[in-house]
Amino acid sequence: MLRHLVLASAVVALAAGVTGCGSGNGGPLAADSPAAIIAEAKANTIAAQSFTVSGGEPSAGLSVDLTIVHGVGCTGTITQGSGNTSTLIWTGKTVYAHNKGLPVNEWMRGTSSDSDLQGLLSLCRPSSLLASLDASSVTNATRSVTVYGGQPALSLSFPGTAGAQGGTIVVTDTATPVLLNIAQSGSLGLVFSRYGATRTIAPPAA
Image (cartoon, rainbow, N blue to C red; front, side, top):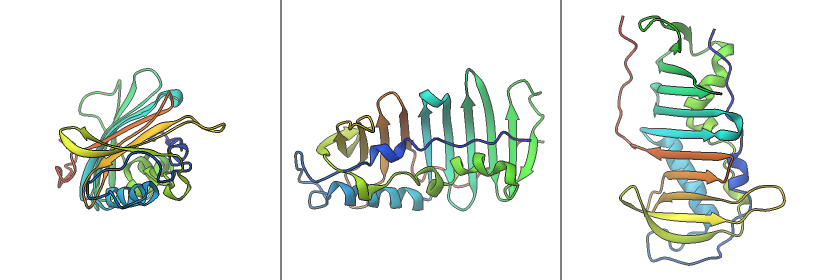
């Protein structure tokens, strides 16, 4: 059986209360409010043909490095605690997992409809992964133009509140923005990259 995993919803605090304060910019998102930018970047990321997400929640002892392909599945690694790393391959209706300590060619196998796997597969579903990123509640963001991974980007930074730490959300500074980074000090860090780079996912070698 594959272990039931749930990514804690720390992203909800990152989108807590953004208004349009802070420095402006002359890019394609200049006329949009921070809340509108986050909502659009979230929607575009969920709809992307493929992307890689890496990082996690140090406080929860959980990290991921997953490539998600829309309508196909995902592949990569999930680490829990100290060095407990599992390799995951989800393609079509079949889910394979290889845990540390198993022989190289020995994989566990299940189906994507198995109830025990839904927490694990939620990490591979962009809509579930980003469900807690609520753009409607963000306030007090400072926006600035930057360069991230060699491409023009827009950084939305906000201070902490009594109920949450501050953080930063970085999106591409394009007419159709996508997420590049979500960071909250000490509790969450996710990096989004390789948009459109992967088309298929192969099952493990026999």
